[in-house]
Image (cartoon, rainbow, N blue to C red; front, side, top):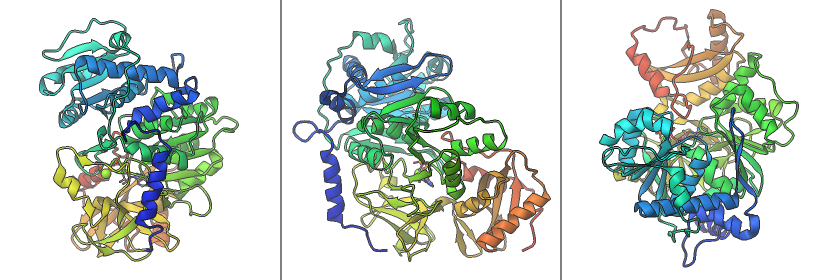
Length: 573
Ligand code: ATP
Ligand code: MG
């Protein structure tokens, strides 16, 4: 596959993108300066940065000027506590003004911001806090009392806990850990605390991966990532100054922080943040009521909306006149999802592909007819992607032919690429091969240079000598109106290694019966051919998911290995 541009051209593209940012004197760079102070200095201090809505409370609105002051105060709080550059501040917070204050203030101070998923139980919190060697955890009183307080004896690096959204200072210290009220501390801190003169290569953000394929990894990012965050916010999401933007991802994951906090502020947009969890009707109403222009969401949520709609329990506003761009990330959306968006939202939902490690969107569907529905799309400007043929151990053995499935790889370097997996340098090094970053995802590239997602290398099913990507099978089945959710895995089979098995949650209004099973098998065989089509269909009431809502194929696969129910119902082939 011929490269679309040369190393020199890509370097020039990133150098130009860097010029869109201020930088700090002497070649410094600080993400918080670029996200906040830069706009205030340019006279946009009165523009709304954050409009935070809730079901039972009035909205809270902060301008760019107000958020800059809050971030400065939080940086001053860290100074006062003696938390220095490079130390890690974890948040265990939902979308709230406090979250934005902490994220931006931490980075402003040259410390490292590490978001945690507030729905985590004590064990995942303890593991991540310890792996991050966090000095500070910021959370709410309820989460502190329910989850954190009991852990602090086992998190030796933590020196301070800050309690957000609580007006009293009456919090007892926990052993050696000082527990303080965030608002009191902010009130006493200087609003003029300047931005720390960080270098582009100084660490800024630490994200744990979703853990879809194994134990989560802690990917460390540097201030230079601002270049990629800003460029993609503009080029892929189409964000511009004052644009009303809603990112539905939880801030505990990379999307919810990079595209929920930093990237939109870098682009000068107005963030609409919803404090509530998913609710189909609330979301449909909010899109119109908040006049959302750019919406970044995920297939899990879109599928739930489709299901609520199919079940007749959802009323859409008359028109979504302001919506210009809808984009999706995290799992494949599939052609059916794109078509639904066109009908229902009036815009084609744009697929975007990236990972915690890549730090920003790398491949996207431009939302026009030049790229077929259901494709992942093309690399963004400044990125070269390829598909490498891999051997049994998933290591590259050369380039893949056009249309051939292999490992998706990205040519080094680019600004937002992670700089290490904390505590696992060997694993980090294993991600690279001969000038390429190996994504761990399988893809193919067609003759037009369009990339198609096939699956994760770890999820690939080797069946009777074929390498089958579960997603290809899943997207075919999703085209049947009865299929709400689907997960395709390999069932150990003495003859063919792994037999393709589809676990399906049936859409409301359809019956999970033999007739439907036969119809689905026939559809898959016709479209995919007998070698790739599932041999067995299992109807399920729900599928296991990660905290970020991704279907956990490995959990389904291991439940098969644990069950001893044999190949009952295996259809003849
Ligand atoms: P872990 O690395 O711990 O197994 P994870 O890979 O799910 O977890 P993330 O970095 O949050 O953690 O997710 C990135 C992965 O999500 C990608 O490697 C890819 O497999 C999947 N993904 C993201 N966007 C898309 C997309 N548009 N289409 C298909 N898959 C996607
Ligand atoms: Mg991953």
